[in-house]
Image 1 (tube, rainbow, N blue to C red):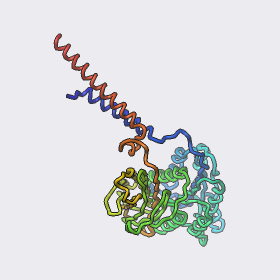
Image 2 (spheres, one colour):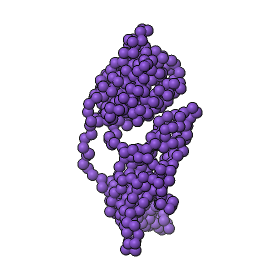
Image 3 (cartoon, one colour):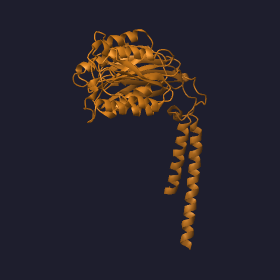
Image 4 (cartoon, one colour):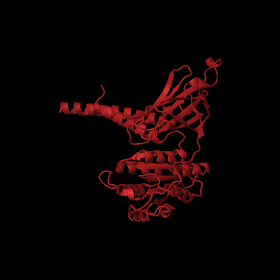
Length: 424
């Protein structure tokens, strides 16, 4: 009979072994990757007169923006070079020509001095016009140079007031230059026209648009975008997924981008040889207002429709991106398989359960990024290795055996003590 003490000892040993196996997976290397070029981000803030409105959690839009900036500045990764530009912060008059030139760099793009940047933000007060187009042009110049990623995060509560310089056309011109600059936009309590304009700006450069009505939403979203700039830069390859596996494109290892409509299925094909492992992940971004409670499903199936493995993830409106992944190790060939094709065609199915809020356009589809990696399967015995334990498998066995022996000894000692106590 297994005593509680022996069971506890065995469980503790098993937990320790699992921790060791996961913490030191197979193939882990100590060498650091080559240093990446510093990513650059410029926060562009609308300081026009309408930012005085008090409709964000009982406070003004300007107060919400300042709070968000302060918290984001504290959390900005060290490797990110960050700058701040304003629009409509200085000119109080009615001359349109002058008001449409009112944009300045409040803090230069470079290594971040948090105290200095916060001091500069604290001086801002809602003032003038809304020259979004001119501000975007200047911000693109501010980020010029270098090999790292470049991102503009535009925060505004209204339409541009400096037409005919259409900010959407400005964004398209920036994208056409091929300088790899992404513009993400956030609308503070936006109306339909503001939402359409900010969405258009973001779409033009492959960025995202987010509607914001609460302080926490603003802080979380700006923080996400700044942190995203620190991710390694990889240029995805555009691909057009199909409605069924039979017509799907065949993909090699790499990063791919596609568009997926609400509730749609997209199919792709990957060839996997015996002894190889397919590792794949997918992210679907809600680049417009969506209803809460959504999910993404990634399935690997055979050409005959039999499911091999799946990955799934859900969200509740706290983030604009949902990601999931899966792994499929294909066993080595046996002699009996010599008459079968060497490569297996694996069909990848991506499905989402997003739904658009009222009045939001459903086309084009939402941005989808698919990572495919076909590698040699881990050279480890048993299925445990395929779950990432790697060389920890041997440590797992040793610690489980040690825990078992320790449990037996503890049980014998406990029984001996009980026997001695009864005789006395």
